[in-house]
Length: 502
Image (cartoon, rainbow, N blue to C red; front, side):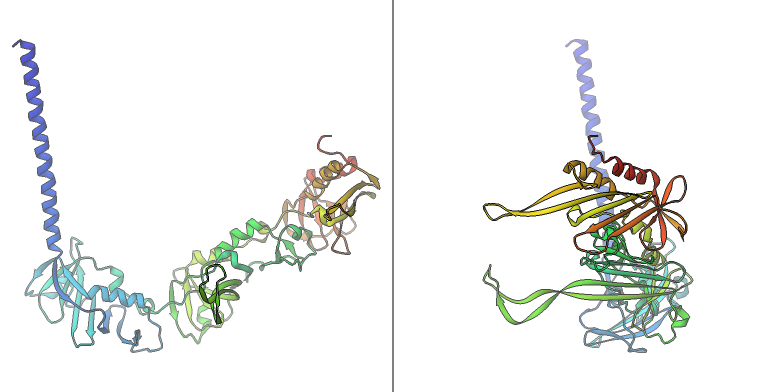
């Protein structure tokens, strides 16, 4: 065998030996880890007591915050010392979960000389549960071990101290307020809300309502929006649909942190005798209604005993003072219970801004609902009008033929519509801090829309304000301005009457 071949063979053998050593070490390490896990699992299998949760009908629960006895009557947990106080079932179940299967990780001392060493001479918590068959179990829970592995515990009738893992701190430190059941506000589909009112002492009131029938038609922009802003302005304005949808999402749920007084008689201590704010909501809710007589589904032939119906609901929340944590005392209108609601939740619901919700179109009308538009520029009147004639073809189908006029002369439809788009495109740009007056000032331009549905025109005038803006006057307080350049473009489009191609 040549030297080169012998050298290659030795290298190959060396690599195989090294690979075998690596595989061996890996197998040893994995088995070592599994063995340790098995040992750890074995530590968790010492069960010192069990109870039948279906039979538990009395619990005595004591910690540094509360000393209470709960009894189960007709499936409901009752606080013996205050039978009218509603008790949260979830909290009772958490307490039961601590005692129903008492599994410890290891024995600490079978006959300790000093229970205080483990925090068991004055336990963190004591839970005594009784079953209907007479069985009683008491678990005393002391302090945590120095390594933080768990709590020291002992049974009430024995001396042995154990280490018990997985006892949540909250389960052994409940207060009476924690244990009091919370009746949250409604859960609402935000797209089912049709009326929202937010009243605040230190801010403008806000109110928005769904108005598909245009009861508040005096604001022309309502023709493109079914939402009307009733407050804070002196006249009704249209709301932007997307802005309203985003706003209403904040009112889909009303969750409370705790119930501090389930039957309050003195609301003044919570600031709820004269609330600093209130939230009122009207909404639709779908409910299942029993039919007086069963019906048959025409598609499936199955018998129907219920139907889905829509009912109108309302909810009002009163908001009082803040507590030491900065959260708010609240109560449902007509309810004596006082709850705590997180500051972030309350502020999210009170953070309303009318201007950001406002539709920014000043005077926008569907051209099919307009007969005539008059634009007065410095005393010169320009008129855009339409005449419609309904005809019937040979097949009996009706057709509307429209003739377009500018200052009494027939004009091209495309040019007319191009100019019309510029006129209705006027927008609100900014809100003034305070309303202003225009007494003694002549408008730069006045636009009046005559519609097919209403006798009186919708009129808007634009007045000089500064180098950048014109004041907008729609008949109420003047508190908005429009970009001067856009209104000047409107004037130019009407005066020159040119389409896009020109």
